[in-house]
Image (cartoon, rainbow, N blue to C red; front, side, top):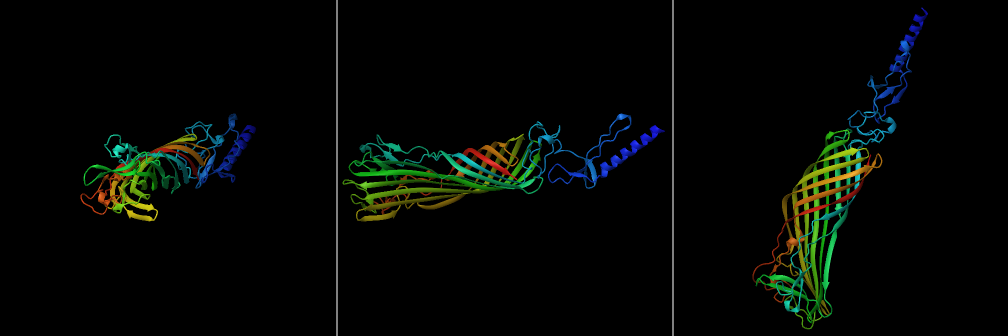
Length: 472
């Protein structure tokens, strides 16, 4: 009977302990931030007959329903927005993550945060401009610098290579829902306005010979306008070119799929890319005692300077829609991403051609529109619109320094199918009647040349970037 009484008391204590475990008022908050679940503190385990101990199961209460508590995300489950990016070591349990439990666990994609911003330094290279037509020549006095004559050489005949461009790119994004399924992102970049300048000059005797070549539209023969010539002219010439690329885009980001260490998103949006370039030639010719060069159909006075300027400017503005996708992989604190986009739309191409001839000297001065290659027949603004496309590919690898800060290095390649560039806009066939420095200026006979057209080519840029991302 004594044994029966002890057994009854033990059963009563165990029953009371289970009641406390189900309805006890002492609650602790769930581990994950923003989690609605709370867990009840279980009562101490009660002894069971035969020396066994009852194991109390931790419970969570959600909407009045009790469910077993888990630490962090279930295996393979992607954490939701608002959860910390990593789980402390003491919270790790076998099977919680695919990573080693001694490492911090970073979320596989962008959903552990709501807002992100990237700042990047760009070091890019652009496609060199095609070699311009012969702009400056030199040679022995007997050649007069005319193309095709013995000893004539072309100066500045290389392609317009702008070398590397420094620049910057900024990205700002925001997930519209807590699940990180739909977001918006804005991107803008700017490369520096890179310039090339080449020049040549004669000495006080007029050596070396310098000339600006062109084809005479009336005779069909090669001819020149002399810049320097021994005993007749002294002078100098400069050729300069500039190039700058910039752009912006606004996109919707949509989640395609999520994994414990990777994610894939699609990109749909609008893109703008701009390319501004120029090519100019400026020559100064000082008239010597035996020199003969015209201004407004009359010889320029001895000792005066005739400055001839030709300038070709182009601008390309692309507007279009784009689609693409990107994939992000995480391994502990390291990550890598791949991205591809294709924009299709319209490129508005503008060519601005301007020339001038200026006379300066003691008691004389004057200015006339028109140079040598940019004259009345081809000067002014011309434009056209072309349907074209721009694909872009990018990759980057990085490291999560903290929960909210990452650093990365990336590579980008962009191709532009249809653009106008300055060196393709030059027509070397010129009617002397349009040239203010020619003695026949003002009496135009024969072909109306040069022709003003918008000629097209393609363009690409590529380079590396170094950036930092901040997440919140």
